[in-house]
Image 1 (spheres, rainbow over the protein chains, first blue to last red):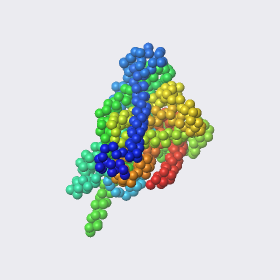
Image 2 (image 1 turned 30 degrees about the horizontal axis):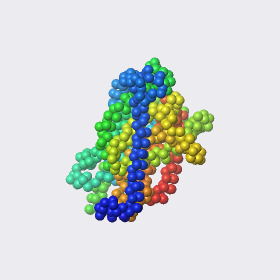
Image 3 (image 1 turned 180 degrees about the vertical axis):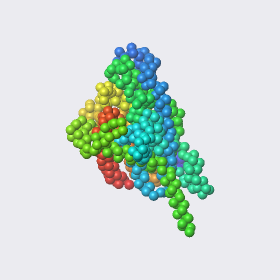
Image 4 (image 1 turned 90 degrees about the vertical axis):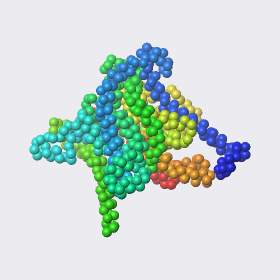
Length: 331
Length: 297
């Protein structure tokens, strides 16, 4: 009450009562506390990154000296990275990362938006049941369904129709889509890709917060629902699209579980990276992963792996950070 | 007449709604519902691969019995997986909530800190973290985690000094020795909380200011109750994430089993594991609703 009055009359701090002084002190103490927390957590976040960078730059000679970890006596900019790039099959890996994962991320971003718009804007029978199913897809992890998915993908079928054709005529039309892009693209196209449930949920929250009047008006003017969606709803959803895109790209980039199950070669970068600790000994490096030399190469591998995502992040972080404020989740 | 026309528009609209969700529904059936049923069938059968694809022979609960009673390996990993989640969950929720509250305030350097704290979101949802914090498998003797946090704090000394009960000091020790892992796992949760904080109506804060509420009261009576649904979402997300993370010993052993083509046994163990996870999540969500949300709102 006191502070409110004071700020209204704009009197200087001269007429401070002990109570307001205590409040001021509390405020200062709080901002000190805040900066300490921020620095502490910031340190925890930066430390592993710096560790990765310095470790990856250590030269072979400097491994002998276990005391100087942070500033290696001799920097070796290239050799660890060269081995890491080779072990990661960087060029081929990057291409298949783009081909399989990134394409399916883009498909997922679009298909999830369509499904979410249906959920957020329209009333239809059994909507609660459908929402329940959507919630189930968030809860049940891919690990549970990966085995049947692999089996089904080896003989792609649509509700048993092609299997029936096979039984009746002996012609097997079921294609094996394992090791092709379709294994990744088909689920993404049907909004059943990597963590699609969460993306749909984020979209729904946002679409619900958009004022419906504009869309109603377009509707009254005779624009169809698809037109309204593309022309009116999507252009004002840049914020949520950005958030979803960042999440989807990152999750796909880091996914190795699905791709290591679906593919038998031509792996994306993420799979190569998981295989690196086992692959280095075959390239003539120490067998024990804890050996500093292996560690240095592993860290170089991690860094070149996150580099593309880091570059994207640096470009979009401004908008991404703002967008989170504006997406708004009410649960 | 008029009502009829209105209903016509409504039914048209509901048809459009169904049209929008149709692709998703098809995906749900093909890539979700059917595989789940298949996986349940696999867990109850002997699965073998031949040229015609897959042959299954129904054997009942045999695989469940083998995995849980005879092999003995899983029950132990199961215990580890569950206890490690129970200690991680509250800490991750706490860290991300505190971070979100701080990052939501206005202060100098906020943009910088936000950009910094979202870095784990970019980097840490995957293998880089596995390599950084490897604690299972062949790398157990070489954890970076150890070199990162091992010699930084000596928690047991502090705990002994403060004369804490053994249970609490163990808990704190475990939390601090994994603090890197925990903070790096709280990225998405922080983002969710920040997004949630935006939807708390500012009028509530203004009213409480007029009433002369302290910041502390403001948090407990406005912010926390308004965040209850987002907290639930964060809890669910964290649980799913931790239970399915490849650093989870259970998933690690499943992965090896699966790669070996041992489909039936894997399915059985996975079904049991996630049924258990489902029950634990159910209890936690119920307790959360019962004891925290009801009390404050």
